[in-house]
Length: 246
Image 1 (spheres, one colour):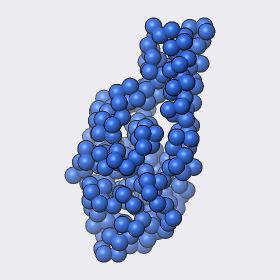
Image 2: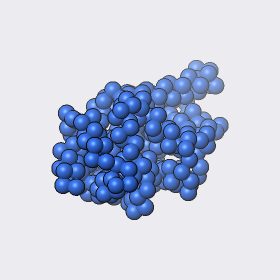
Image 3: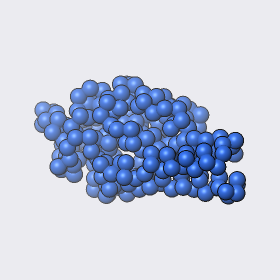
Image 4: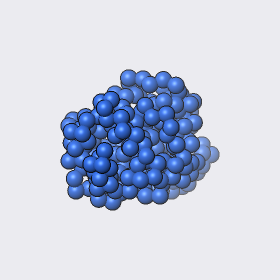
């Protein structure tokens, strides 16, 4: 176990210690149930060279908060687990994803996760753009089964609050996953009564806010999700332009 603790401190930067460190400690303490020392070593090797609040730290945040969203409606669905695994394979490659997912299965069994403490630790170390990207990812998990439940919306909203993501930003990202008659307006944070000039101004603001370059520091592996947000903003603007004929 001492080797594991040393590895955590060296390999996960700010993620070690506090509530996140405690949760990872739980996962490692359950090693005899499926996570071997070799698994931990491989997980570490795949992250060598990462320092500060970079891709590896963001990855740990994804694992912990993903488990909370998946359990929000009282069911652990295979489609949601597949979404997380698929995301990690796409972003990090199969080998690294396999190591992450072994830890994830231990984390998801932890019944004592304090999302407030975990989220506040994340908020302290992550910039605004990275926190928005995290909320976007959590909604992606919720939508993996084709439907975002009220329980999932509620837990993500709670997480967003702890991450200091304001109501407008939360509603904007939510509208990218839940269709209604005003989704496109919510994405741009405007109303149907907004003037063309107000909509154009809002579009420019949102395009800057969600531009993929904002999360470039997280690594190329996270750019796909950022580009998806950016495309939703562009799509919303084009739909509104067509509807209002300007």
